[in-house]
Image 1 (tube, helix red, strand yellow):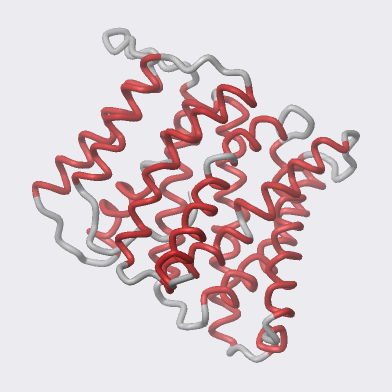
Image 2 (cartoon, one colour):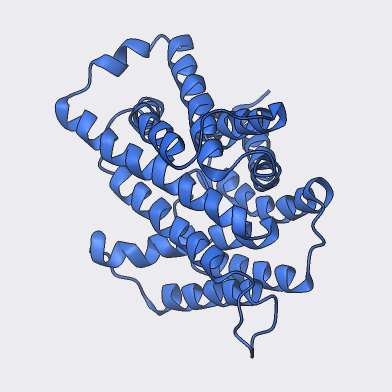
Length: 297
């Protein structure tokens, strides 16, 4: 089997799993609140990441970083997993999955806009037009196609979903300062973030859960949304002859996600969702960077 074939297999597997997480979020939130889902999914993800380092014989590297690197991980761990997933899970708790998932996809547009003040990058008219197209899709989805009334299905939910894109974009901007291998950096970020997720769960909820189904959902989210897919996506990019070949697979995820949302969560997909998603994808493609997007979302 050629490296390119392996790259496609890893990429397709990752995209397939990413396509299920919106459904996993909604199904898990039927059995636990956002604070519980945040803590337990972070716990499972941290265990997976430590195990991966152990398998690779790199677990000792967790204790050999500089003070500055540990400080960076503390800050990044606050953004992800703590703040990002807390806001995202709250958004999914308030919105149908078919609305929260496409809105969250606009984080790459947010990343482009934030790069102006934070990275001092210049963007052209093409980028601004792409952002306008993408955010028009958000309006179509969040108003459920009733554009004239400008009445959102859940204004707090939409605000949280858009807020999650801001946090995720900030995470990847500041993550560019991390010179460690990606798996090590991510593992340390989660180790620093885990106590925050536990504290929030204790203060605003309870770590005691009454449903095994909720715990299974948190394990699924932790393993596949936060953990293993990160490694598989990096492998796909590394093995591919051209990263764009694998990077383009990410555009399969939104359509597949709606299929899972319909059959697993039971949501009837509205025409406005298809229309809005089409606009968001058009904005992403039109303003697509030369490099593939970072993993996640």
